[in-house]
Length: 157
Image (cartoon, rainbow, N blue to C red; front, side, top):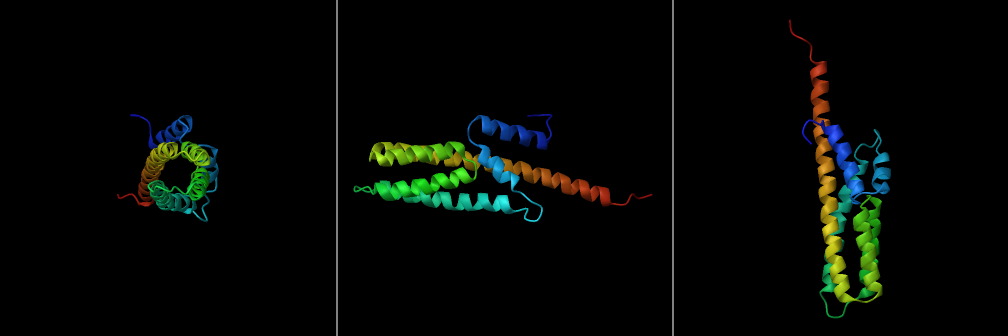
């Protein structure tokens, strides 16, 4: 969006991600927990999610690659992953995990494989979304830091 400053671009991007269903109210609630006493809290929550989710997706992939599929274990992992996605506000990923769990209830391996691919796509979409938001926030921080430094410099005569 040329001509729009970064804070406005960030605001529009987050709104767009809500409209697309990538993010939901849980994202907003998590962001509302940001506090000057612990400025890294939200970033740490996202870091834990993006550290743990690929591991669980890998486990799901491994469990589904066997001939004797353990649907109970897969369903439990999908449930955990659903909770993790929900906690960071990943609405479409949460829904994909929910549908994946339903496929486990039906013991339908082909549908489970389809849903796993959807979970992976939604994870990647959510990761890209959060990375874009984080990048814009960094740019805003850098601009603010430069602005504060320029204000503190004494003028030379």
